[in-house]
Amino acid sequence: MIRRMEPCHLEQVAWLEQVCFSENWSYQLLEAGIHSPFDVYFVWEQGVRESNLAARKLYESFGFAAEAVRKGYYHNPLEDALIMWRRGLQS
Image 1 (cartoon, rainbow, N blue to C red):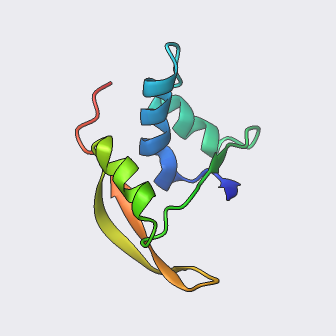
Image 2 (tube, rainbow, N blue to C red):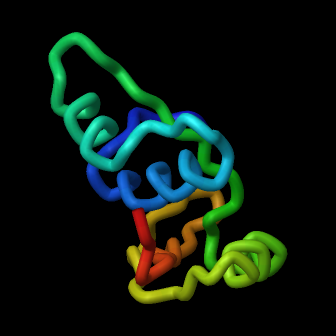
């Protein structure tokens, strides 16, 4: 699913920038961009559903842990979403 980037995505996107690019965008730059009237950022989400064990294991292998649940977030079928965070990111 492709959706507009929101503040809840910032930590994860900033981490991916650090991991994937030698010249990465900072958290602060990304944050400024999502609040800018001139920029539009998108994220691609694939299988963050609670029942998607393969995605959960992938996130866990990178140090993410389930910390919260969004009840009824997904439809068709109705399912909760796990909020996974990786704590202790270093800049």
